[in-house]
Length: 385
Image (tube, rainbow, N blue to C red; front, side, top):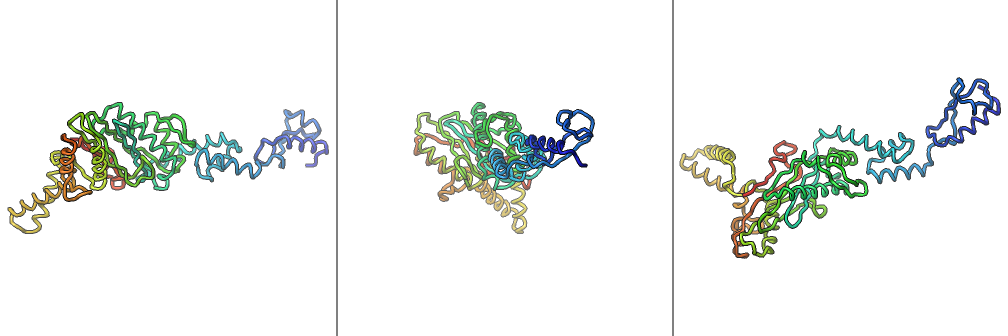
């Protein structure tokens, strides 16, 4: 359609004023006369003209890159998702950040059924209490991310405050469902403020692009004279690791010096990680476990074809060997295999001049039992005397 020169000038002028339109075109209403009155009479019934306007193009390339960089720094989302959100929100960075979070919550929900067997154990402690949590993800790449590590340590501090409030003299499990309802204060530049643990985990999953979950948590507090000792293996930074050993050492004399207990306690915590004990003492081995093991050993001995009396002796000998493998007090000490842990405690008692005992212990390893379904948070190796 050919329009009068005055109409063309009016259209061009209107296009140049519409710099906030980012789709690359402008839509205006004109009357059929195509006169100068199109600017004043936009309400008349007419036709729509979609006219490409050079003045309404997207922000300059450098400005786009700057916005992408800023939003990427704010959210740690993939560059492709960052750009997509900015385009959908007309390059409004605040609206794009909200859009990314909405998308992230949706994607986190979709990924929640995927196996998350990687991650980290995070530990926090003070003079009287210790807490450890397991935060899982899908890959060790995400476990190395500083935001993931910050959230893990923040959750450990939260578990510590809850465990201390409950005065857990033994290893007290803290339910993930219970923890998710609590508020956690995050101080990372890319994830800060107070929010529920559940919200924090969802936001973290959205940022990382993986399934993230709090699997389990334990707290331990001392109520008598002694120490709580810990050891973290494969530790990327203080308070984090892939394997953890915790135990409480109690001394009978309330005035006994604790220096030796701290030294030996740290060594036994390392032993717990290395030796993987299942029980604290022989008396704490359950009757069902003992009977099952006895049946297995008996079946193996009978296969040798030896007499019944010899078989019984073989079963008892192998049962003693079993205790040495799974009972902490019966295990050979990893730092000196000429003695067992019980002997180490006897020597410590002589050194401090008062009887010393292990009150409880916990051993955890990231992802243990997840693939096979053999263990969950209720089956973690944790025992008290």
